Length: 213
Image 1 (cartoon, rainbow, N blue to C red):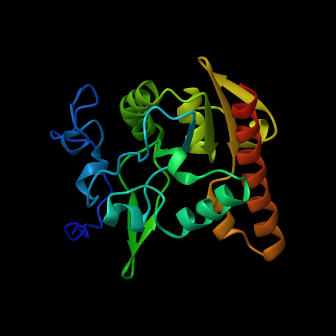
Image 2: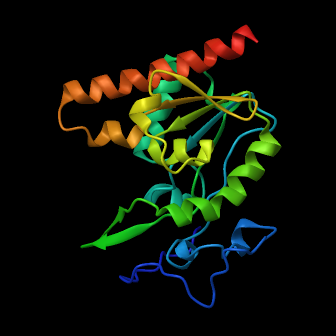
């Protein structure tokens, strides 16, 4: 059972217990940025390695922070249904996030998502690069702008510019689409349907690329 999350209202900030140059051996020991202070726990990726397909999201949400697993909350359930529709078995895919700790702010009794800062994404690149080297995916699907920038190593990459193209990160093909949480936040049913359809299509493109190899 995860420990009860801290309820500090203060923003995470650098201090004596943060070392961007640290090279920790475990996520639990990571102090490369300050997000560890207010998270319940670090959330590593999940799935078998090697895996030909890797999905990268932004960061854990509230459910993931409590469970210690990626994509197990509402966005994860939407992702599961999109994978199934695209003909992909989730157990064959490695799923992770660009940032491994939940960044949040307290609103009443709810912990609400805050977008990671670029310095936090860069600090966590240490772990994403390790995961990619270990998993050796042939195709990476970047779910959202933060994931795309992390995978490409380009803080200026724009999601809309890559939505219907393929990019390269070394020898790996990168396909970009919306994060499932974007679908959940869309203002009306038509926008939700369109965003979800783009995720399914991106997953189908990734699956097709792998079958042709």
